[in-house]
Amino acid sequence: KTGEFKVAEAKNAFAQIKKSKNAEQVEMINQAYIEPTIQQSLRSKYAALLQGAAYAPKWLIEKTQADNNAVASISVVSLPYASIADSTVKVSDDDILAYAKKHHKEFDKDEESRTISFVSFESTPNKNDTTTALDQVNALKADFATTTDAKAYLGKVGTELPYYDSYFSKTKLQQTNKDSITKLAIGEIYGPYLDANNYTIAKMIGIKQWPDSVKVRHILISTADPRTGQQIKPDSVGKKLIDSIETAVKGGANFDTLCLKYSDDPGSKEKGGVYDYFPQGQMVGTFNDFAFDKSVGTKGVVKTEYGYHYMEVLGQKNLQPAYKIAYLSKSIISSNETVTAASTAASQFSATSKNKKAFDENTLKLNKQAMPSGDIKAIDFAVQNVGTGGDSRKLIRWVYDNSVGDISEPFEVGEKYLVAIITSVNKPGLSSVSALRPLVEGIVRNQKKAKQIIDTKFKGTTLEAIATSTATTVQKVDSVLFSNPFIVGIGMEPKVAGAAFNAGLKGKVSEAIAGSNGVYAVRVENIGAKPGATDIAGIKQTLMQTQKMAAYRSSEALKKSASIKDNRSKIY
Image: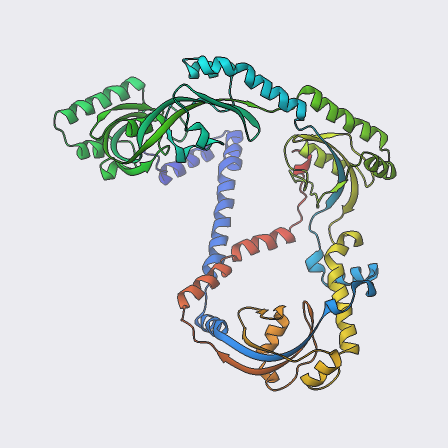
C-alpha cells in the first residue's frame, strides 16, 4: 500500500516459487526477474568500483595548478604552408592509404557504413495550394465575424489554433500581428493574414484588466493521478471533502492546519498552500482564471483535471489589458494533385535511370542536383540531408539490401519523394581512398609542404639566419600559456606551445617544427609563472569529472572486445 519494496517478502516469494514443482513457472521467474536482477547488480557494482577507484592525488592537483599558471616568452621564425600553392603538391592514393594505415586508430570504422546520392521531388504546397487555403478562410470570414458563439463555430468548421476560453496579456500572445490584433474592439476581426504555414483570422472576444502575476493559496483534493490521469478517487468523494473544507474555513478553522492535513499538492502543502506570484498561463486553465479574474480576498472551489481546489486570492500585481481572442486558422497543405505530380515525376525519373550514367544525365536534364548523404549505418533512423519520417527506415533497409550503382524506386520522406543511387560501401576497418581523401588529403599535403620547407628554406643555426633564408623576420611572442596552445599572432599550435616550455631550448634554437599551419623554429627566452588564484577545489573537480568517465570507457572497451552481431536493422 505504501509502495515500499519489502525485501524479506520478496525473498520469501522467490523461495516458495523455487520449491514448487512447476518448472515452467520457475524458469519464467528466473529469466524475467532473477537473472536480469543479478546481471544489473553486477554491472552496477562494477561501475561503482571503477568510479570509486578514481581519485585526484595531491601531486597531480599541484602540478595542474602549476601548469595552469606557467607562462613563457619566445622568439620564433615561421613560414606558413600557404606560401606553397596546393596545386604544386600532389597527393596520391598511396599517400592517402599510407597515412591512414599509420594512424589507423583514427580512421578504422567499427561498423559498416554506406553512402548514397539522391534527387528530390518536392511535394510541398505550391501557389495553387496557397490560394486554396486563402479562399477557404475567406469563405468563412463573414460567418466568423457575425457568430455570437466563437467556440461552437470553430468546433464546427475546424481550426488549427484551438479556441482557448481565457485571457492573455499582450506580452503572452505568441501570434503574428499582435500589435494590430490587440487594437481591435470586441467583436471585430483582423485578417486573413499569413501566420507560419496557416492563413488566420483573429476575432476579439473580450478585454479585461488582469494582473501580470498573482499570489494564491489552495487546498487540493486529488481525484486523478497528475502523472497518468488515472482516477484515484471518485469525483463525488472529492467534491464532498472539498465542500467540507470550505465550510470549515468559513466557520473559522485554520487554513494552514487544514492544508497540511488534507492537501494532496506536495509542492505547496508545507507552505500553507501558497503559490507566490506566478505569471499568467503557468497554472491549469480554471485555476489560472480564478486567480487572475477574481479580486483579492475572493475564496471559492475550483475544479481542474487534478481534482478540486479550495482557493483564495491573496495578492495581485500590475493590472494591464488582457485579451480573449478566437482564431480561425487553416493550414496551407499540399493538394492531391501536387503530391501526385511529385510522385509521378519521381517514378518517371527512377524508371528511366537504369544506371549511374542515366541517373546523372536525367539529373542534368531536369536541372536538379544530386545530394550526397553522410555515412549511413544499418540501424540509423535518419539520413543526412534527408531527415526522418515517412520511408526513411525503408530507404536505409534498401541501401543495405542492394549494391553500389543500384538505383531505388521513389521513397517518400517528409514532403518530398526521392530517388537514390548507392555510391559506396565501407566495410569495417579502413574506408576506401575516396572516402578517406577529404579527411586526409590536407594533412598529407601539409606534411609534404613541411618537408619541402625544411629541406629548402630553413637554413642556418640562428633564428636570424633562418629568417634570412625564409625571407621572413624574427617574431617575439610573450605570454605563451602552457594551458592554452593558442598563440597570439601564430594561431593554434600545440607543438610550438610545447616547445616554449622546454627548458633545454632556453637561449637555443629548436629543430624545425612541422606544426598545424606552418613550419617554425623557436628560441625560448624565458619561462616563469603568472600570478594566479589557487583553485584547488576547481582543479580537483575537473580532474574527477574526467576520471569518472572510467565506467563509460570500460564499457566501450568491453564492447569493442566482444564479438556481437547487431541484427536490429532486420527487425526495425
